[in-house]
Amino acid sequence: MAELSESTDIREIVRERYAAAANRIAEGTSGCGCCSADSPFSGSTVDQDLRSTDAEGNEVYGAALYGDEAAAAPTASVQASLGCGVPTAVADLHEGETVLDLGSGAGADVLISARRVGPTGRAIGLDMTDEMLALAHRNAAEAGADNVEFVKGHIEDIPLDDNTVDVVISNCVINLSADKPRVIREVARVLKPGGRFAVSDVVADPDMDAASRADMVQWTGCVAGALTEQEFVHALAAAGLTDIEIRPTHRVHTHAASAIVRARKP
Image (cartoon, rainbow, N blue to C red; front, side, top):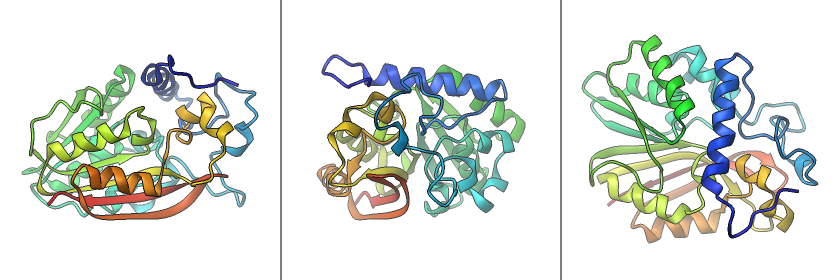
């Protein structure tokens, strides 16, 4: 078992995991970033709890979740999705808005957003992984999207000015941060007054076992780092966000579910 410790650099391990996923995607051997089948930490006693499909064989991560939303982005960008939901389906995007996608990966949600906000709007993808940014630029060029921008940086320190974004979206990324309250404070900072937060993320059950939280593969697989619903609500409220809504959509683990999380900046 690869356990977390105080000295563990969570960010670097997550970056390495997603860089490897980007390389597989570029080589045409895409694999789920939020499941443990190809993990370098295989052999964990909790690996069997985390899969890309549920007991009925339904996909719980990745491209299969997009449905009709997939038509708004190049197939390659959607197929490269490592997320647990489809935030663009619930973000209620409007013409002319500025949208920020945290942990934008290969760019599917940015490109879908770009089409929704139109030529007078702007879609920004923020990612820390060079390999993912390269994929995103390639997919944007294929889409012919000229109202998009991909920025390298960390979601704990968003490289944008205060009050500049109408909507913040994210797809199964906030749970990967070692400092989630700071991420949410940064979201509140960059949102304009009245701005919206609409993300898909993993929410942990209150009784998640200690083994799941301790295992490194589960962290980079989108589970061990997840907040509980109560913790998510507290972090959003502490950052000054209101109209908080958390709606579970499907189970992704014995002790966790994917959920739509929404809030608003007053």
